[in-house]
Amino acid sequence: MATEAELAIIGAGPAGIAAALTAATAGVQVVLVDAQPRPGGQYFRQAPGAAAAEALPVRQLGASPVCVMTDTLVWGVFPAAAGTGWELMLSGPQAPSRLWARVLILATGAYDRPIPFPGWTLPGVMTAGGVQAFLKGQGRLPGRRFLLSGTGPLQVAVAANLVQAGAEVVAVLEAARLDWRAARHVAALWGQWPRLAEGLRYWRALRAARVSLRTGWSVIAARGRGQVEEAVICRLDDAGRPIADSAETVAVDTIAIGYGLIPSTEVSRLLGCVHELRMDRGGYVPRRDAEMRTSLPGVYAVGDGAGIGGAELAQIEGRIAGLAAARELGHLSAAEAGARIRREQPGLARQQRFAAMLAALFAPRPGLYGLADDDTIICRCEEVTLGALRRAVAEGAADVNEVKGLTRAGMGYCQGRICGELIGRIIAATLSRADDMAALRAAGCFTARPPLHPLPMATLIALAEEVGD
Amino acid sequence: MQTTGSDLTSVAAGEEAAFTVLVDGRSISARAGQTVAAVLGAAGIRVFRRTAHRSEPRGLFCGIGICYECLVTVNGVPNVRACVTAVAPGMSVETGAAKRHGDGS
Ligand code: FES
Image (cartoon, rainbow over all chains, first blue to last red; front, side, top):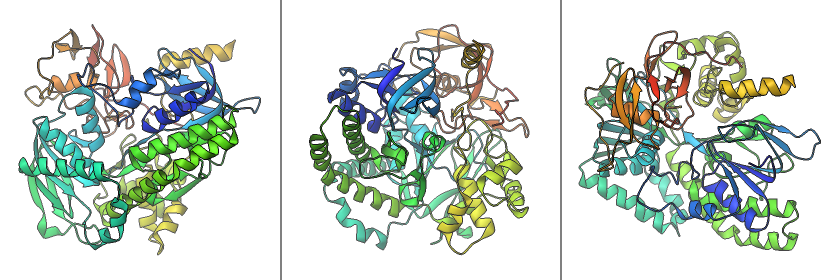
């Protein structure tokens, strides 16, 4: 396995694969690292031994000279000692312990935004993406009777897939109300025909299966002894607050939640890239120029991990960063790279418009963040309740890192991936400043620290031996 | 640990059991490429562990290796993510661990 690369790409989803293929075609020596056993990310995921052919980009990757390191965690990235590139710390059965690279492209993807409610830690409450991964990746249903609750097109797709796989889907609750706000975005739909047709197909499948589709509704509590047995669902007012007398109880064993996506920015935060709060891109994202360069030289960021935009936008961003990296590494002339990047611009603009439309239509409204009560766990790893977090804020903790210091929230195994954004919102709500965005910005985001994932004992021992030498 | 009573449904038809793994002492059939979580699901197990402080049940949540809620003990190694760990012949899986320790960073 390679221990040096001209270009290292972290994440083998749509963005990372597009970047890898583009750069490798230009002659760049590329190493593509991914934690999963097979490339493709969440988007091109496939069941083991599935009869259908792999997605085209995954097949192209297999036929390319790109060195693909799967089953490999990147647990740290540091400036290389000589100041000429970056050093990646790896952990995996086949991976070298370190990989040195001159240029880095971060394509780390995203995960579902959970919104906490009483009972959300019960087994049987899952994220919509997790249900989808289980279904697509394992060919199995993670339950029998499903309720979906969240915002955005993903849950309609997941529900349709569940129905097709033989599951009972009781209802799909869309928290957003699709109203007049949609009108000003109609132009963004231009050219999105395949996507619209796909959405319509899902919608029809759900109608045919008599699945109840409700907009302006959400799950507000899960109940059960030891696992989910029922969900309380409720109509929401304009601020996203439940309208008490509309509450209903439905018997289900699985509740899939997903209120949009959160970009995975651990690596870019660890590196110290400048980040900005962009709710239209899913939260804190690395600041980038038009060629996907972050504030650090030789570090690019693409795809959902740099701001939510979907697989189409991710692939365009990946190609642009791949071209820019190839130029930076001397494999493409400035003129050729520039011309090819210009050719991507119309598609880029179209996908950006579509992403902006989805973000505006499906942004979770603030009232949803008030579903939890004082006894609801917010940090699932360290079991820190909303009440404890509020007390910390009352005692003077003004940003997420201070709250972490006082309560241990965000110190557990997931390192704040699930609770980080929630704690920012809790601080902003508790301090109740007039300007929402300014309050969220002031609450900040967790500092990322290595190791970005807990390390297996074998890796720790190997490291200790290395240091001991 | 607690089960739902019967196996959760398999979507793929006609799949063959390639080997067995031991789940809490029970022999469960599995095949290559499956995750530990999928095999636990097939065995009807939804509660993967209990929490350290409140002893609350937890199971699959994110399903993609991010939340660390699905931790089980595999071949004696604690705190292994069931959702991203592939099963292997002869593997022994234990659910219900009451403790896990954060790295404190
Ligand atoms: S379910 Fe989240 S890490 Fe396994």
